[in-house]
Length: 617
Image 1: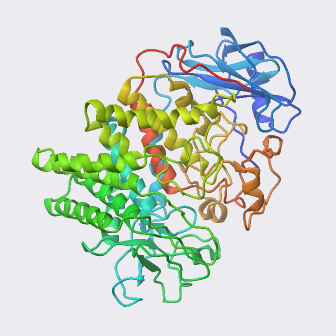
Image 2 (image 1 turned 180 degrees about the vertical axis):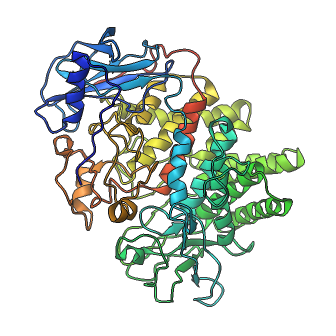
Image 3 (image 1 turned 180 degrees about the horizontal axis):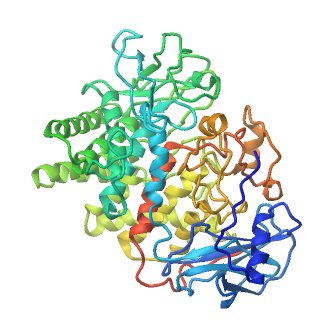
């Protein structure tokens, strides 16, 4: 498959625009320098920075922003200090054009490099959150609205539970986790929470163009809530009684081969798949086992999703809301009874979600229970707030922040969501304490990020784009809680990275923007077998070169169009054979829905001043 490099049809026929067009549509040319930008665009009043990067140690002192329609130079800027080598580049510079606020279409020229076109405008992010919901609907199990067909309707048979093994329970529904068709409570509950929180915090952003079953049509409820309820319905099946809690549906036998979702018959019991009971003990039916120590990590995620669902889901009868309320309480109780981590179960391969933290989940769950009970009774429960704060003090900083590596999903859900929820309900010293945890974590990342032009402080581990999305949310929440914008450039740099301001110059979101370089050959059966678009899916993202070289079963199927931008530091491939960097994930996409909604609805009233002082190597 040839890589799709788009040119914009609205490029004016000026000499400079023609040069830009040639530069953009010829990535494999003899170019030795490039300008990376946010391909989706920039809000007028927000931080705006592009990155000049070159293969030679070239001195660049100035840059020019040129209006496409007229060819006129509308801004000249100074590059500032050189940031030095990074990844495949011998030299890099940050090109800050934040003072340009006039809406329009532009390109940037610095030295011999010319950027792709980009937009400055109030509506650059309009519809982006809803666009990502396309991928969530496509991931539905049970009835799949994209295929207009059903799959996995026979799930499933129990393992490890108090009932006899192979007892049938109804576990159909929910979302497939990624390009495979496994389903995990940890990722599904986290995704459900983010969708509910996105509607709670930014209701104006979302439209109503789909029914509850995902098919086109209105139902007087925002599509994001329809999607969140799809998640809640499955979670209720996975916690069907107050003393029963299941953690996983299917295992890595799923990886037998790429296929469009259907009724899988290779688990040994007809079309049923195994449903793993949350015992709090190590599990694994085949060669490998996890290192589970309890159930609180899963129980906390259940409880927080149910509690937020109780407060936000509309157009449902009282019985449904009462069930959410009851299951929030029972899940939280199980977490208290069995502290520890409930990791996913591996099978034939050694890969699984190696979650090693749980107090963050119980902090969020306890804070969410307090919000839920206040919504029902209008009475605060100081004991719950005290307990939530105790959990918060166990994991003050998410452990990967500032680090160079971590195991796969070791610290999940990548940031401490509970600090934000608890801080909103706290006052005085307690609120200041929680905000301080966020600031300390951001500062640890900043100490690394300030040394390179991309302000990159996120470790290039598996699913680095998920970490990037979550960290940008933490920066946003810190700014939201404090009004302090000193990390605004860092926040924006992480957001821009996802949308093209990275060494490869590509957006990491399939199909966004429509006229930019985005993934076209992801590790997805939908695209590989049927050429179906997976609109809105966030791919895993770049990994360290040494991780890529040591993963099992990766083979590039076509010449690497990004070969010039790979390095020993980090690699990214738009090739379906690379499951480590180019596989879309359901939970990462759900987090991105929240981030896009925040960017669309909330805009600073003043442009950033100096922000955090930039560092260099």
